[in-house]
Image 1 (cartoon, rainbow, N blue to C red):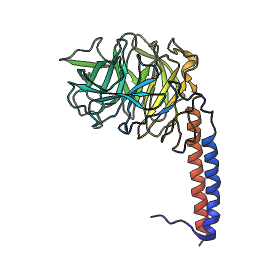
Image 2: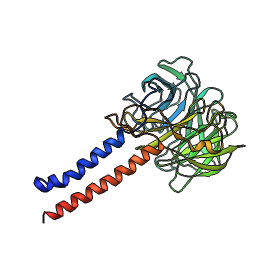
Image 3: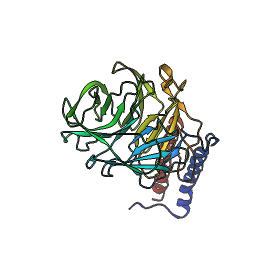
Image 4: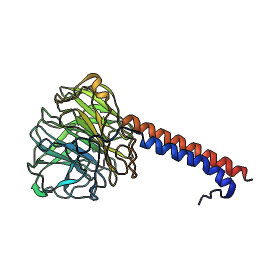
Length: 354
């Protein structure tokens, strides 16, 4: 167990720590005022204590400002509707007829209004010979309910693998999966129509980096894929990836999910953990057309303030704000540098004790 200096030396060593703490608090508090409380599609914190491993996000098509999410492994057949105005769960859906989910990692909504849930995780790096996709219509009324879901067996043409990103194209309805591998994964395209009672084979159609989630823009012309530390937007045409560029993803503890807002004006980035945060990043030039192309997908920090929680856009439990891709990453760098300076100062003071 480490020992820390006390007495006069400890007091001198504590001075840099106090200065650093004050600086970090000042930085955490610096940010745009929360002038949009109650507005939908803003930064928010998932308040439901049952949701501790939010691994996917999908913007509701029927209920403005509501986002569908789920836990990952070993939680059961549950999907939650969370209101971005309050961070509270407004409906819990129990899927019936799907067996026991193993590792639910992705969620998306198709052009038919159905919710697709991807039980596609494989933490053993490709040892399960098949995975599943579940599907049910988005409920018109937000209330707790049990629904019968279709279940599709899925295999990959080139063998089993781990995946966390499930995306349904908003125009064609075709389902895509991005596999997760530290050396780079693949984008897999499903059949034109999924079939129950038969194997649905997904074929590799592109190469992608390490991916934890993905989302199509509402017009289907862009595909955003995120990882733990970054995100990229790809042009998407005729089922194939095109030119890509960086997106201003926020700094989050365990970056797991991303979705476009229903109108395409912004991206919403989520993370795992109790009271995890969802951060809005505006898409430049975005809007009802889906926020389609060019420089737009570079994104910019939103003006919203975000909710509380352990990492709603970098916000800490005290409510200090350091949200957005730029600010959160900047704060993360300041913290890392500051901790290093403090450690060095303490080492020097302790060394001075002889």
